[in-house]
Length: 191
Ligand code: SAM
Image (cartoon, rainbow, N blue to C red; front, side):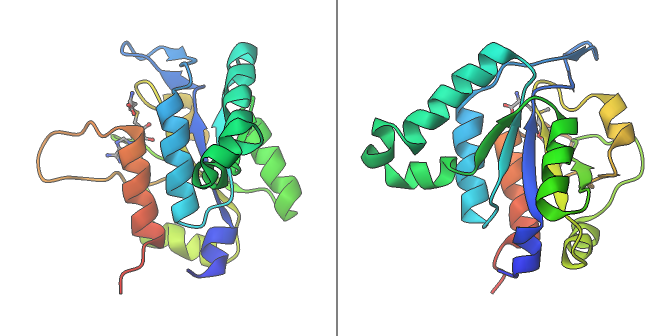
């Protein structure tokens, strides 16, 4: 892997601001499976940090306990591979806090690149995103939960990634699958 690609890239799984079925902006509940699968996927492709974004204090506590069990509790010795993946998980209260954390870490504010199944406006293709990373810009790739990222966030994100398209009209990938496909397009070994 080219280091500039992975060193500059982190991913965020947003539970706020996301949409419900009716298009209202809500906060969704964190799903255990999402955290495990995204952490393993990120670790596989050399990404150091997976931000799990939720403003809900009880969720921050709950996911904190879950991650601590696998990183430093009994789970760490029971399953070291799971520990290795979950070590990269950082629970954080907002996407704004993600921006500030990455800015401090890299010395320059990151570009937030949103993902969506049906982006409302202009999009950036994976080649464009790769160029951005190679040029040294820190990037946070933001994934949604529930019915996807809220339109207000899609409008203020620095870029929106072009959607994954299959071979028909069906367009309902899980966030875990979408993240795996996108990371493989950006970072996968093609040889
Ligand atoms: N409850 C669902 C689950 O089990 O994952 C949540 C689906 S949520 C709408 C899916 C998220 O995955 C989106 O916010 C986006 O981040 C990503 N996603 C889904 N389909 C996509 C596509 N075709 N292209 C890009 N990203 C996609």
